[in-house]
Length: 617
Image (tube, rainbow, N blue to C red; front, top):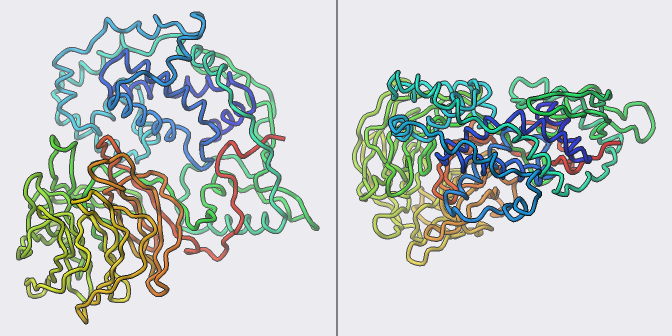
């Protein structure tokens, strides 16, 4: 988290409500532009923007210390917009606002821009853009943000923002861009907005932060060593770094910072003893001038592992597939837009984890979602899928070096919602759906371009996940469309013997999950409990050890979602895209580093994870 934001939050949680005005001033224009881009109504956008900041103030204690405040704020904004669109019901804080004196919340100020409207032609132009492109245009033209600021706000890279901006501009006529540059001048957020939010926030009780004592000397020293090792490693990506050293004072002088509407005295205190604590003998108790934010961001949690936000995929999607070749992840196909008005896609995008960079690649020949992809000898094979009506049997081969696709022999059984895995150079297409759930298993040999029928899987299911460990394939989870229920079943397939064996059930029944293998263990990530009643998605990470036939809990993914894709590179797993209730497609990419890799030290004590767990001296 940026140090100035962290300091302001620290002040707010210690009773300085006025300090929150600095955060409102800093981010209100961008949030307002973001919300208008979703709701397309200025009055509603102003109301919802107010709700977003009040909710953020209420929830400050829950903000994880390694998170970017602005990214967290935009997640609240996104959720609020989805709620408004889905229900358009009475706002949760309206009763509170209506009870306030008119000098605190002046309703007329929030409706002062009703008379101004974008021209019909501009509205039509914006409607023609995909949501992700419209979003960056709104933040740029309406919010006055540059690509770097937009990237920080929505959790992607500046390069991805520029790519979306270029695509959007190419779809709009020049006169439309000129009109956009001036059309919003009369629609800015009203004067006095920040003051009104601060006054309303004064009526919201935020409990002071509990006192947290320092860690024992030995652990403090070990963590200091651990973080130093991580900081020196060229393979570790340190995101959202700040300049607050562990155990160091925040600025101690009392000074007035003026941002936008209001001067606020902040930064009066203090020391935050998160890592530095001299306990025990000797003088090694205090850590050196380490970056506190990095320490909290990188420290493994008790459940095992850690998550980090990475650059968004340029095209938000769910039900796509992935293949990993030469350390790069290729995301293939998927569903664009909302069923039934959306469409399957043929878009292919390449992710480089080292550079945290996305690139466009040659489109797949057949647009489809709910396909599966596997890699053999450096080539990716995209198999089966759904085209919005029928399922398909298409098999297409992608050569990342040539950036070219060619058609291969069709799979005998047309189906979507299947999963594929590779053993000894052969691809096994397992389960799926073609009007009913399937137990079908078919083997594809890329060398001969031929398919062969194999022993059926015991449990017929679609939207399952499969992974290979030690030349055995594990079919995990899935969906029963007859009863609208998710499976927790795990079944092992031995291609050499062409037999199936039941294994220990996954703890959480789910469909639309993704799996990846690291160090001989299978990580089952995300998913949903139902398809017809799609009101809950999972952030669960559950880890299966095939040797022990045992499951254990991993650290939950930050963004709960289903029908996501994943790829493992250099021992790290990348969870990509997906969908949440409301049929909202995600561009979110999050990197999971399993516990113990590549670290030699794994502290057993959990560091504080939210701002509400730290108390100033």
